[in-house]
Every structure is written in C-alpha cells, then in structure tokens.
Amino acid sequence: MRRTYRVAVAVLATSTLIGPGIQPAQAGPKAGGAAIVEHHPGNRNLPLRWAAPRDLRIGTAAAGGGHHLEQDYPDPFTYDQPYRQVLAREFNSVSPENQMKWEFIHPERGTYNFGPADAIVKFARQHGQVVRGHTLLWHSQNPAWLSEGTFSKAELRAILKDHITTVVGHYRGKIQQWDVANEILNENGEYRQENIFIRELGPGIVADAFRWAHRADPGARLFLNDYGVDWPGTKVDAYETLARQLLADRVPLHGFASQAHLSMRYGAPDQLGAVLQRFDDLGLSTAITELDVRMDLPASGVPTAEQLRTQADYYKTVLNACLAVDGCNSFTIWGFTDKYSWVPVFFPSEGAATVMGDNFERKPAYYALRDTLAAARCRH
Image (cartoon, rainbow, N blue to C red; front, side, top):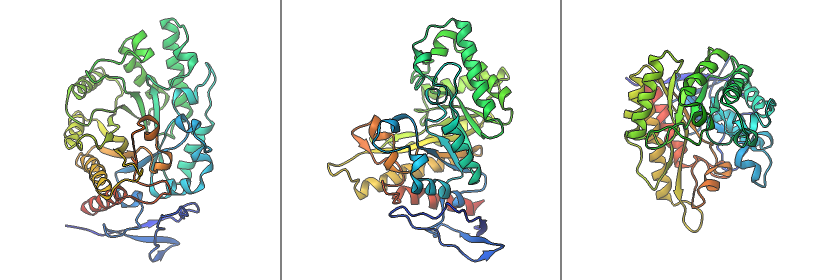
C-alpha cells in the first residue's frame, strides 16, 4: 500500500538556492515554525535528502584539493557560496573529495593539516549531515616524503599506525563511515603492489589497518572500497574471499562499497545488486560511494537529449541496486556539478558525468534519482 509522508523540514539559513537554473523548494503549510513537504514522486522541488527513505543516506563528495588545486578557480567548498547552498540543501552525507587523503592531511612526516577537513565536518554538523571518511590505506595521492622515502618495515608499520590512529582519533565520534582500505586489489584479484604498505609489509597489513581504525573510533563503520566491482567477476570473488577471511579472523570489518565510477561506453551495471547482496549475505553493510556516469561529448561539448536520458537510466540502475539490498544504507555521488567534476581532468574525451550542469541546472539524472527515492520512501 502506498503511503504519503509529511516531514517537517527545518529551514536552514543557507538552504535557499541562488545558482542559475536551480528551482527553489516550495514550502508547504507551517507547523511549529517548520515547513511541511508532501513526499511523493510528483514534487519536483523536493531535495534528494528529503525524498529518500529514512534509513538511506544520500551523499556527495565535497569538492576541494586534488585536481582543483591546478584549476583557475579558488577552492570550491571554501569560496563558492551557491555550491555550498546546494550541498546543504540536497544531501545528508558528505565525503571529503581529497581533504582527508594522505597528501593533503599528512603533508610532512609528523605534521597533520586538519583545517580543510575540519571545515567540512563542521559544515556537516551544522546542516544535519553525516560524514564518510576517505581514505586511510591507498596506493595513490600519497605525499612525496612517504612514496619516495626509505623506511624499514618497522618504520613503515609505525607510520601507518600513527596516521590511522591520529586521523581517525581526531574525528572520533564525528565520522559515520571510513573507507579504510581503498582500491587494494587489481582486476585479477591480486593485491596492488603500488601500495607501499602492502608491497613492503604484506597483505596482513590490511587487517591491522582495520584494527587500528576501530581502536581509534569504535563507533565508526569500517569499509572496503573499490571501483570495478559493479559486475560479478574475479575482482568481486577476491573481495568476497578477503571479507570472509577478515570476518573469520574477527577483524572489525563492517562494510563493502562499490565506487561505481561508470562510463556510457559500457553497459549499465545491471548485476550490481547481485554483487552487493553477496556481501549483505555475509552480514556486512554495503554502500555506493563515488557514483558518476561519464559520456563521450559531441563537438559542441553539450550532451544530447538522448545521452542525458541514457545517463539518467544508469544513475537509476545503480540506485535501484542499492535500494534492493537491505544493508545498503549509504548512496553517494562523486560530486553533483560538472563545474567541479574530476572526470574531464582524468578522462579528457569524456565529461558531463554528474547530475547538474556547470550552473547547477538539474539534469534528467537528478530527477531520476529524486523520483526513484521518493517512490521508494512511499513503499516503506
């Protein structure tokens, strides 16, 4: 039976959108100073966070650091007020895009730079959002002092333990989920040797990373996170084997996440739900953590209507996969506007990967997510 929900939405001082092409939410009747919004798929102004089922967090990456430092604009999260307004209005979960990665938060040995990440955590708390920590053990975006240094095995182990203990401990009680081990397996299911800690210390360091993170914040949910796990195959099999082993060894592993960086050159991941279910069956939470859908753009640089419809179908397919699995409780897109997307920097022939254009105008993909979320909420 379909039910209509009435939810009191606190009016945030920063939630009024002024970006071009954005339709502001229409407030309904007032009760106790709060706006009342009817939850149903036809409400075209309902933000994603309020359309979603109550047990599903809808998130985005908070732009900053990384490739943004090489662009001709100031830090998006810090200086783009319309961007911050959309971020506050649409989402109830945020993931620092680069601000918690090693090169940004631990630029020199023994020196931590928490300022940019602290600002995101503060923003999230002010706007009723949770935070996903990203990331603790990864082969990429490490500072030169680490990647080019010469260390004994004991030193490397101490460096990783100190980093995890310090960073996770700094945010104790403020981070809902952590991507502890990020992209640790190759497509053939073998451990990435580009990861200095795995290469020098062996795969057992993965279990240690989870144990250290759990000791630093027992309340945080700890995840394996990777791309290329949207279809069944060797890589997924290897992650399932790893997860089973970690659980058997009583390692505090709580979840498995698919990044879901997708390209329209390939088919939509229509078996993603089956992949997530395999890990749900192990008793793990699951999540979509970095969804975007890039496309080959015409010479004009403007997607065609057909491309936008296809992109919307991809987004909907991934969301439906998450909604179909009981333990999938976090759904994050990797940025919401093409204005700051990482895709054109790393895939020069592709782009337009997010749910909004450069001026925050909503694409069909945005409405596909919003309507699918609202319909799912009505079913609950």
